[in-house]
Length: 545
Image 1: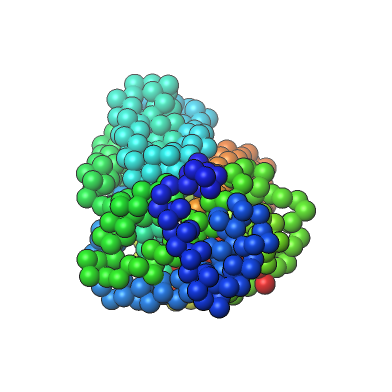
Image 2 (image 1 turned 60 degrees about the vertical axis):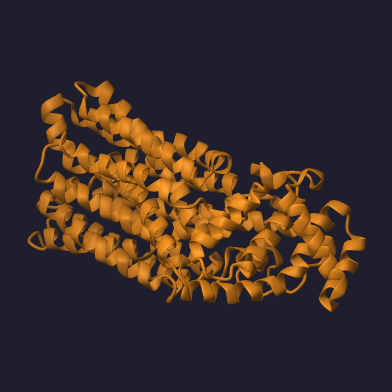
């Protein structure tokens, strides 16, 4: 990987920047401090990490001024690029939402049993796991745009396989291809958006990923209630086509270009995103300084994410962010390991609790849950489709105002209440109590769950995942987090029917308990990242307070 190249093989862009930075450090009081550190550190760490970190305080201030200028300048290209990328999010949503409205038609036309249809619905997650395993490597090797293009092509083949299916085999093949498509898109879309967005808008723009996932689900629910399952395939094909058509008109991620040493394309991309008249010098310097700082570090490995001897230090020390001006010379590599370990805990933890809260169980079996509680399944799914979009939009608007932690705390508290009410409705039904209130209680509980999930636990984990990993760890760490998410999705969606047979009320009480633990996890460990550039977030994580 480019970020792991030894200093002797660094791209010309980075070696020139590093040399210029060392010259600056000799001329300024802050630079003299950095030079002192440089003489005592090994050469590789000096060139790649310590001097970059001691210089970055000035670069951060310049980047802040440049970011303000960028937000005052043209944001048209940022918005266009985000609009193109979230076509992938909409595709994600249609793939997930397709199985619920299509169930009756497919079972009737193809002759599948309920268990066979359960396999058809759940193999989406199998394909997504494979997609998650390859997503980080593809995005780091081919680039963010080419990876989205590849996923869209696979998605088209998946939808065509379902449309032309005459039996269970072709249906499942198409579903697996759609799973691979969603597994890749679920990683690369939020990463791309976070890498192109100005810091003041990054949270809201990255949250549009979840907004369009919900929009895709809602479109599948609402349109699927009025047309056949084969015609519903068109709803999934449209975003793939839009994504393929739009990608040639938007720039590549400037941070990815900087990471692989493509200087001319890096500056052209950043300038295009910030506007022709915007001053990008500060932001460009900060990005390059961060790339330099990780260049001399050891090659990223999966075990670096979970360094046992640093677990406690990471948990205790990295909860609050601060603005570091220098970094202890003898701890550069240990702090990088600690930062990576903490990032992994937060990223994996959020995705685990997101799944343990039961979202995919409710998503895949919404109609069944409503019917089991005595409420109309078609009406229930339509109501969910209607409320998800405005609530997710509200969450996107609040992302850069209220902050990530606040939304997560409110959301996980709300999913606890929603699951508890739903479990209570099934408990009353089993005991023969308040039978007239059971359908209403289930409706309120599920709607409350979706409202709470859509405002926080849906979008925020993807946003934080795209923010907290450094450029050299992003591919491998993002791959792990996305894989964990889809493994959890498979386990929950596959086991849900068995859990409901065991105890319907108990199933939802378990989900509510997981949401309660999520509140504690967020309050104790999850950092606030709003209002900071990706490079500032990395500095704060590496320094720790």
